[in-house]
Length: 105
Image (cartoon, rainbow, N blue to C red; front, side, top):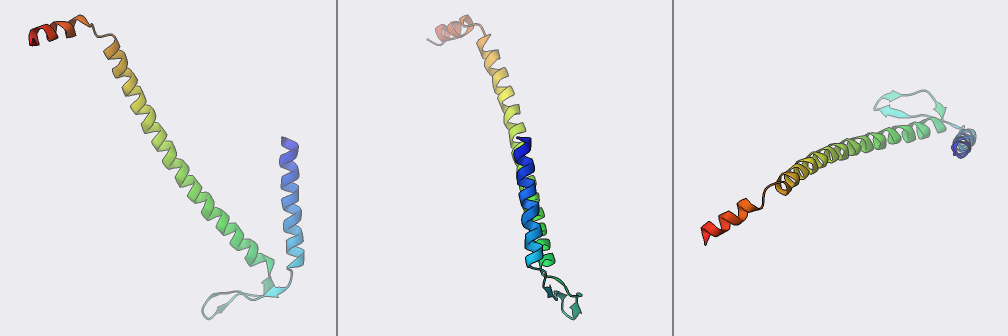
C-alpha cells in the first residue's frame, strides 16, 4: 500500500511540474483597485486558488467531522443510559408487579 501512495504522490508532483512549465507565461494580477501586483507566471495564481480552495474544503470537512464526533458522543452516552435502565428493569423482581395487579383488581 505504501508503494501505491508513493506512486500517486509522484504522479501528482509530475503533473504539477508539467502544468507549471506549460503555463509559464507572465500575467498581471489585480488584487485591489489601484494596486497592481508584479508580473508573475500564470500558474502561480491558478495553483494559489487551488490551494486556498483546498484549505476551505478541508475546514468544511473538519467542522463536519467535529459535529459527527459530538453526535457520536451523545449517542453513546444515551446508549449507556438506556443499557443501564434495561439492566435495572431486568433485575427488578416480577412478584412486585403481580402483587400490584392483584390489588388493582
